[in-house]
Length: 177
Image 1: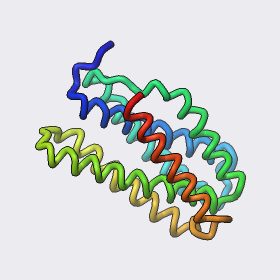
Image 2: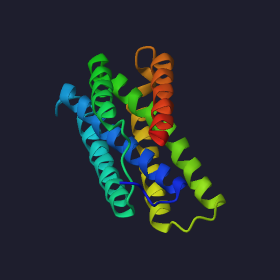
Image 3: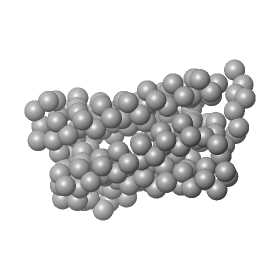
């Protein structure tokens, strides 16, 4: 099915749905390793529930608007789970470092999108509100992760830098594919 959406809106919906899909998978990987008894299990479960709400909202908007998910979704399915599980295996602080790094990039990404929509004069109140709400909750996730010891994770600068780079790459790829 060919999308009849404005190409800019199509790109925004595709990449944001992909990002929220990936976030759900990251938390699934973390919870698979940590279970419900880890030191941050309740925080991870809360953040995972919010990410699932974001994903559901982007799924619905994408479907209503005739857009399509990224063709890379099977890759993000596996990669997201693997990243979540790997960081949780390192330890609870590394799992929080993963969250902090990703949410820093997503805050920047969503803020850029909101600026882009405003500068273009796009009449997209539903999309703008969804992005703003998701961005604000992502900021809360980052603050929760920092307060939970993310910066004390082993090799935090290296770990966070690698995750942020991977996140930026996933964004670029999902925008285009």
